[in-house]
Length: 341
Image (cartoon, rainbow, N blue to C red; front, side, top):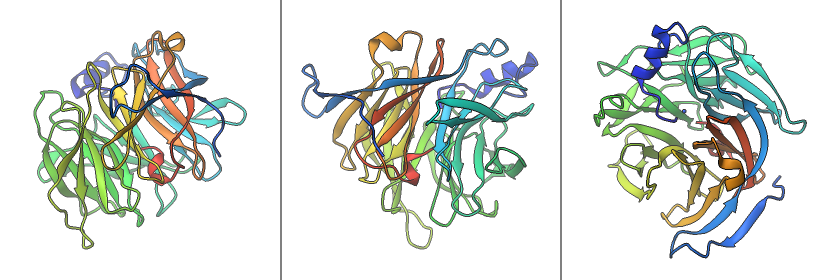
């Protein structure tokens, strides 16, 4: 999620704007960037697909996040800063290039979305309220799945991932507003109980995704511009984490993460409308860029969804010019880990 602090979201609420509130088709690939040094990979030019949202007058911004495909091939996207009454979850028919709102409420500021492999519902992280909410696939029947403290401290859940059995793994960005390294990775059982801290002392953890084999978790820390790897044990224990990739982002910072069938990592950027792609060994393979002619007024490329079983990828890009989808051909095929979170 683009850095909207708890304080800034709460400020919007104080104004009454938000209650207390981040099969493949042809795209324009280029050869290696002539200006790129060793290990920087090639440039992939994303193509504009459609505009989904305008800047909301009530909140002064729009921010698309959490793109995820449902079982029928529709793409669901959340708008983090949508005010009450405006669509907070949108359903996009990518074949017809149409979109409609399927959920709104008076309270939530949702920063990610994922469909559960256990019950088929759509799960949303409500960052400022420390809650996880689930919806029926059509956007109805909202339920609070989890709320409250974990190990004596409330969460600021940012992104999430599911294991094969439907248990949740959440990046908790607590401490981000004050610049404190008190963030965590939290596991929550699929019944909403047994919340366990797997890693702590993190600097605004953001993106989170399993590797292709479900052996461990990749997660990014926004204020350190690094991606770490946390191996999971067969009985639920964890091995010591290690820094796997250091992202040279310049003014940009690490946002959400997706992983394709080949194990490649797609690292979104806040502060630049681009995404960097690494293999599982940390080699930089490519940079997905929004062409300069389209990038005016676009600030962040937060996340990507790759069509399951295909390589067509949809990138969420936002800024003063609104919230947009761009497309490109991914380096590997889409899986559950290539959607949402």
